[in-house]
Picture 1 (cartoon, one colour):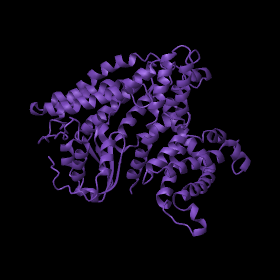
Picture 2 (cartoon, rainbow, N blue to C red):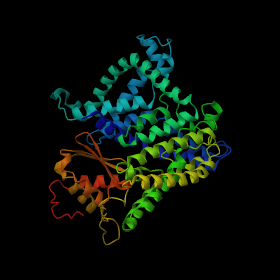
Picture 3 (cartoon, rainbow, N blue to C red):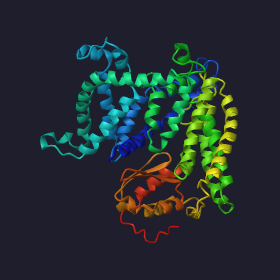
Picture 4 (tube, rainbow, N blue to C red):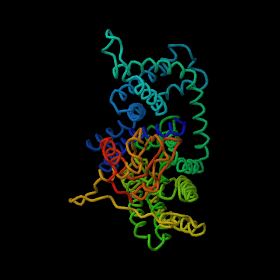
Length: 502
């Protein structure tokens, strides 16, 4: 597997632990709404909710280890998750400052060694041991040992192997981690020292890296406690963070706040521009796509269905989008308008974070968003018309979308829709791996040439991403995980010859 394809696998697995963040945001957000002045000190229920949410935020590193190990395992088995937890505990115990000092291989007092090892409990280490645990599980979970050791065969063997490998990794990290940590700190400080401009640079690259899924690596530096920035974690510390000085009102949240104007208003403005520039005969079809994608972006902050609608047909618009995102983060950081999210920068997260004591003049973000709605609409429309970009509805030969079949109850027949996608993908014989994240089918295929991209889009896919020779992503929006589940349940010997494709 090529490096990019492997990075995509890791990005896919990262969605497992990231998916628990909305729970933390809801618990803490409701807690702050119940007690906006005492921040849990004057209301037992509010304190209960805030502390419950903090339990998730404060332990994201170990959740990354468990979630990545589970997400990358070949059959999504709990044994892989357990192995990830075991490996994480071994590394974070052996590489804690006290243990490193006691072992004596590295002088903890030199340079930034003590700070580096005090930060060993971070998401980067969680991802690292999660990947290692998954690979060991995939390779050794079916191994049979001699009869005398038969009890430890198969899946029981994996946590044991991971613990041994984790010891070796810990030995290497004692020498490597301070250097790596120093590099990450330097990178983070280089950006944070630029203040608002640094937030803008981060926002630009956050969007620009989305097509290859590497924005997760960038987010780990700024949102989590990898090198001490921990923008997301410190925001949700709330009153405790303000009291300890870890959170600063008007500053903490600067790497999140600027996304709200873009996701809630900017991208819907782009969707309107795409609709208005579509050919008259295609406007009804484009409207159905843009309304659904625009609402998802505004309400939940899920942007991929909309972004992928123009990413590949008009890449210049995606670069423009990344640039405008950077501008938005720069403006919000300049004026110290801050809010935070647990999932993404949609209306739900804005409402939940508005009572957080760390939020500062959050109400300015929607007002700024109205400006960005106009800005996105004007710039996208001008670019589409000036360069004659083939955005949805402006294709030389328009592809008619075929609605999913409807059963007698009026509900979408997802099984039938999955059959259509399966046939367009070349059938089960062409699929070696089926998985999904929130908005994408993530597939490994035996022969990518067999995949009919035009048919996939005609069925309803918003885009197709090709990675390496054998990796494919199909952008479906919120239906992705449902369709992935249906694909797995279709028997491998089922006859697809009668399935009609558009």
